[in-house]
Image 1 (tube, rainbow, N blue to C red):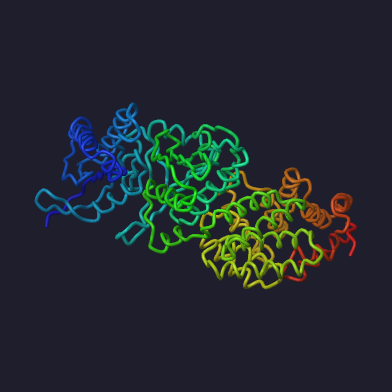
Image 2 (tube, rainbow, N blue to C red):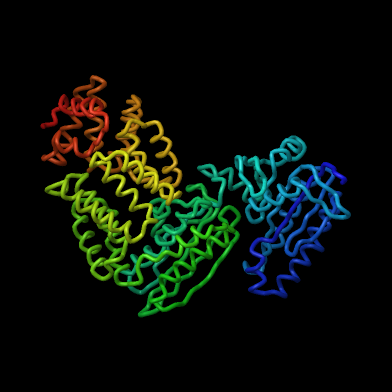
Length: 579
């Protein structure tokens, strides 16, 4: 058995089946032209050998890893130029993977882990991209004028040990990555922008928003994706942002944008998935359907996105994506309208939001997500002192949440909600169990991470809570102000008082109506001996809520450690908050 060390290059066409389905003869002709005019000549120029063609891909070996890398870069840059003037549905893009390793020679073919790892690198590459192993980087650094992004250790199929993976920065995408405000995740990252409402009736904007939100909710359940939270992607609502700017600000590679036109009993939806750093349209489609097909259409779009990003789903993940909440369009519309009001997060909009959600449940009593959303209205009442009995509000909310999970036990939001209720009820073990279940089911659901962090804050694990909040802030770069309040609690418990003050001051700057941050600032100031500032914060809170009291704060701040609870309340007593 002959062995030798070699640089192995594996290339594969992106979305080959889709291209063939659209135009079989044209795709074959273009692929042959690319091979004859770009790929094979480049391999020859760099002293490589094509071992074999594999349908839409190829395997090549090089004696020099520097030659292999230069060849790959030349191929991708030439392919980019050739694609530039072609319509989107005619562009052929490659993924390329390179490894330096031991191979087994058998006739003209080669085998071994060195080849297998190169194939796994190809699978990790972005369309038009190149992924390489650390061994390759070590051998070419200083010999090629290229930059590399560390993607960390990756566990790849049929290779027992994790492999350190790097991506080569190329062309416009390389320049764009330099401009990103945030580091790119090591998995396909996507932001779903609010869909444009093209209907004649402006009131149908809620319908377009609801469709985009459903897509975000579904994608957020996929563990091999990185999905920006709704409240950050919807920061662009009403704008016409450049997708490259969106990618820069949110730190993603892909952006989904679309539009909705509703007329009578029909709906037209257009959607396009863009590789934002290069401007390449990875997938685009227009759908004309009856309104009764809207739920199937949402599932179809989600599935198309996952396929375009070449993410493989387990059977369980596929089943979760297909799980339907309701088939009643009217119920769904009431749900979306109620959700919109609830997100305003103020005392005036909570009752009408509740009424709309109740109408959704009247139409479909088995609408699990609506039961969970109704439970949120009761939790907000209890936590912010908007109900006459916080205990009764929590009881109603918990019952609704349990009903929701009995109907559908795969809802991260419902588990996060029940965890928060159990925390307020001082059922700490259950609170943590439900919180961790929410994060497991919603690996991209930013709010779930912060609700779990809330439980950890109050049970003595504030350092872990800080890490969870930082993760949530990455999922939602334009994060809501309440994240800052939870972070402030973490800092206070950890004794990082100046950081706690800064966090709650930022929250109040964004949400001046909030009283929890006033109380938390007062407690920190009192603990630091700054009594005048503590009293000023309590006075400000009492202006907003004259009925505020030590009793109310005790309900809303459920510290497990009674000594910690008393230290917090003593600070508020010193600052003048009545019992």
